[in-house]
Length: 340
Ligand SMILES: Cc1cc2nc3c(=O)[nH]c(=O)nc-3n(C[C@H](O)[C@H](O)[C@H](O)COP(=O)(O)O)c2cc1C
Image 1 (cartoon, protein in one colour):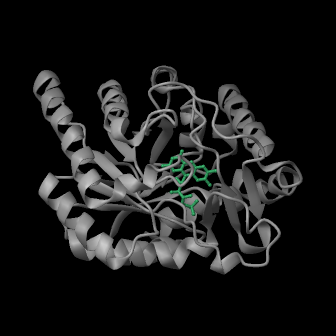
Image 2 (cartoon, rainbow, N blue to C red):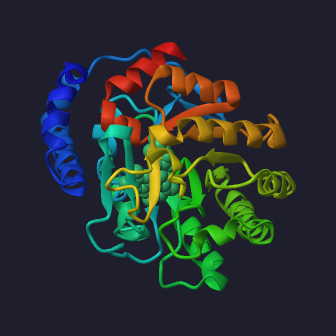
């Protein structure tokens, strides 16, 4: 029912400012969830379990980071069918993010440009919100980042603080070092810096594992804007450093595919259909360099089961949706799970 209703809901939402539409739909989802209506309206789903890094995902389709930045809509998003939900990015301290407007639709290209800048309530509140989720039975990923005011030389301290705090509540943790909207963040993807970040988090993970007896795997999330040499270098760093898994990819700075659109020159990361093919290629390159031991969760412009299967063929063990979900609604989750 909800799958069939979404196109009408989208027509209304797309008349609103993009960020307002986001908050409106998230709060609507929470209300529908609380009243039990969301479950009644949602199509039922057959489980299609996937195991990755010792975690049992109920199905291969997850929600990419950045949609539930506050980690307060997990149950509703779970009811829509997502097998895993990656909340955040959460930073050690709360921050407002960039000035509005900071989210733009490029409807003709089935794309978005965002320069949100990690607006989030901070890791403590985010985790408290995540803990208050009641019904979600899937996997919760906590995506962490650094505060804007923290200089790059101190970035690892921010990741360490957030990682340490997230450990108890996360099924897995993702360190996002590839957002284009925090100045200098992507410089952390240089081999040396990436190795240091990985080493820092690995140490905390080993200590926490010993202390708690629970091993929480972690991923790094990479940009699609990396050349072959950078990918080769990063693969070596990830293999040597014992990375558990990779998330590929974040949004792109490239604009070739959307040239001429009135919003094309807005600063920020481009997501959606213009990213589909390139992110799949990047997944393929990383898969070649990492082999089977470091699995990949694929994201970037998934709008159909075919797009998701192409990412699987390129080496992704699971997929995540963001922009495709905004454009196509929950039917997309169901289509992919069926076809997987
Ligand atoms: C509005 C918006 C906000 C985002 N915020 C985050 C974020 O906070 N952390 C993160 O790791 N990725 C963030 N992303 C990136 C997505 O998680 C995803 O990697 C990217 O958009 C590519 O997938 P898509 O084409 O399906 O959207 C954001 C994307 C969008 C569109």
